[in-house]
Structure formats: C-alpha cells, structure tokens
Image (cartoon, rainbow, N blue to C red; front, side, top):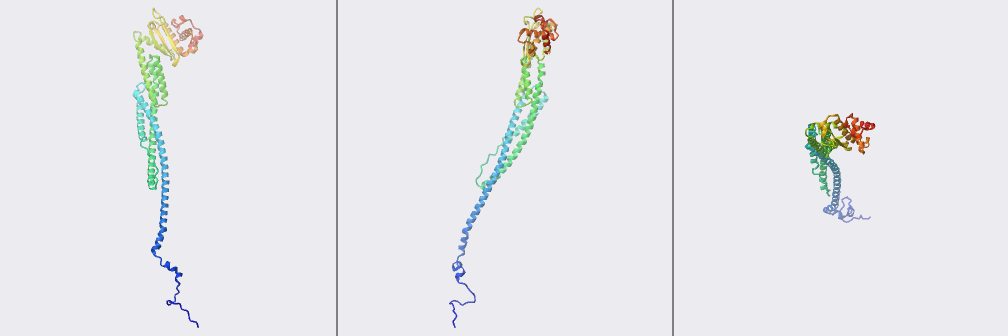
Length: 406
C-alpha cells in the first residue's frame, strides 16, 4: 500500500488557495496608493488644459463674430447718419441762402414794391426758416463717433461690441431726430420760398403803375425799370439766394426812374410847364407804347419864332421802340391849335416807325417824311402841320400802311 504524499507547509483547512503567481503577482499587491494617484494626474492635467484651450478658443471666436456683427450694424447706422447729415447740410445751406435773399428784400423794400401784407408774410416765413435751419445745423455739427479699432482678445472684444451696440442705437436715434428736423426745415423753406416768390411777383406787377406815375422819366431809365421788372417776375418762379439781389436791383431801378422824372419835370418848369406836360401826354397817348423823350428849345429845325413852329424826331426799334421828340417852345405857345396838333402828330408818326419800320423804306429820308405825314393823315389830321405842305402828299398805299400801325 502506497503512502499518501503530503506537501510540507501549513496544514490545510479545507480551502483551496492558488499560488501567489495566480493572484496577480506579489508586486501588484504591494504597489503604493500614492504612485497610482500620480499616474492619474499625469493625464488629467493635459486634459483640463486642452478643455480650457477649447473653451477659450470658442469664446474668442464667438467674441470676434459678435464684434463683427456689431461693427457691421454700427457701420450701417453710421452710414445712414452721415447721408442724412450731408442731405440736411445741403438743405441748411439752401435755406440760409434763401433766407439771406429774404432779409435783403425786407431791408431795402419800399411800400411801392413791398406792401405791408407781403412784408408781414415774408417776415414770419423768414423767422421760421432761420430758426429751423439753426436747429438742424446744431444737430449736424455735433461730434460724430470716430470709427473704432478692433481689439484682439475676447476680454476687450466683448465690451467693445457692447459699446458698438450702444453707439449704433445712438446713431439710429440721431438719424431719426435729424430727419425729423430736416422735414420741418423743408416745410419752412417751402413757406419762405412761397412768401419770397409772392413778394417778387408782386413787386414786378407794380412796375407798370410806377412807370405811369413817372412817365416823364428818361427812356433809358424806363427801359432799365422794365427789364428789372421782367427779371423780378422770372425770379419769382424760382426764389433762391439770387433773388435778393434781383429785388434790390428793381428797387434801385424804381428810384432811378423817380429821380429821372423829377429832373425832367424840373427842366420843363416855367410859364409853359403845364402846356408842355399836356402836349407830352397827348403824344404818348397815340404813340402805341413807343417810349418818348422830349426836349424843348426856342428854335428847332430852323423854326420857332415869328409865329412858326418846328419839330424833329429820332426813333429806335430796340427795347420795344423808343424815340426822342424835340419841339420848339412856340408849339406850346400855340397849343392846342389844329396846326400844332397836326405837327406833334407828324413827329409821333416818326416815333412810331420804331415798331412799324418794315412797312416802308425806312433807310430813305424822304420815305421817312412821307411815312410821318401819312401817319398824321391816317390819324385824321389835315391841318398844315401834318407835313404835306413841306414833303408832299403821300400815296394812298402809304396812308393805308400807316393806318395799320397803332
């Protein structure tokens, strides 16, 4: 009988225990805890650093994008603001120029050309326009926000974007405010333009009456007055910064006509004063709108004494026609005889050739005298002064042609 084999060692207790090598080894069982923690930290730190970098990069990118968006909106708002500023500045300049014209009119305007109602309307419109222009100009000249520079890092980008959003809101508000002021200014300018145009048109309309009141004024001054009136009427359709000078020129022309008329009347003074004016008024009444200047002398064309009378006339077709008639004082002394009426009518016949010169051979002196005689005859003057006794009786065709000239 074989004996059982017994391994040396401790007595078994009925448990089966594996050899040490099957337990993971003696070294694992004896590794310190501190060593295992250090090994874990070696991969946690890089992971945290990587996470921080990723988060930082994300924040940086988001900050850049947010800033760029804020900057784009700020640029749009600033662009709108600048355009409104430019348009409003142009409107302010236009208003200031127009207002200057209105001030000129008010400063030089006389009652003859600028009656009380027109003056009052212009004053009110001018004040409103100047006030509106000043308010808009103050807004235009306020400091503009300078373009910002873009920061590099998110801690600067975030507040910079917030500041841009505030500036954008401020620009939008300023733009809306200025547009409102510009709208008010536009209305005020329209009102001023209307009042100024009305003043100019009214002044131009007063010219014919002023001319009649000063009909003795020299022709050159009357023509200048008419031209100034035409310019004023044209400026009335487009009242602007030049209108003030045009109106002032009209006022100056009115004054020149008044001075001229006074001087001419002074030259006619004397015993024959009233008769001379009566003769001149008669001549103007039949001259068909041709402007007449009158000179008086003792001897004209060799006549004027011993019961004789003389007269001459020149004519010019420019500016609607004008003429200078010279009469001897004896015409006034013998007025209103038929002979003197016929003589004066003959001279007016010369004057009115300024508007009918194509009806005869105006370059021929004899034809000019025949025309003046025919014209006097066509007006019904058969007395000796009509010219027939000196220049012969004109042909009926000439008389008929003269009869068509009025």
